[in-house]
Length: 72
Image (cartoon, rainbow, N blue to C red; front, side, top):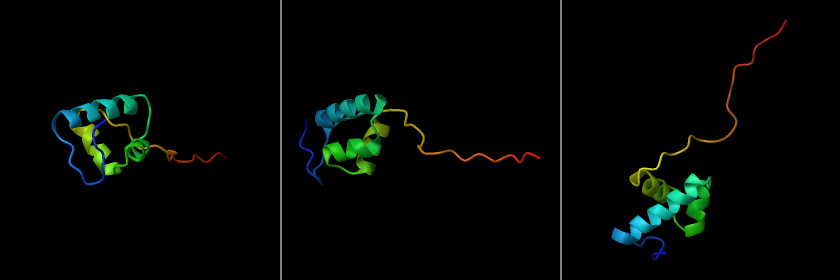
């Protein structure tokens, strides 16, 4: 894995390799936040790398809101 120190630039082949690794883990269900924590980078960095590599991002999680219907 490339040098992932905060604020260090990751470019070229190292960035491509990182993008493939992150994409594989993300597609298996790992969250962006968990990926970011595992490599010591920000959520935004991981989001940007995934987006640049063409990964289809999942919608946000959590409970969905639905209208409650009243029964009489």
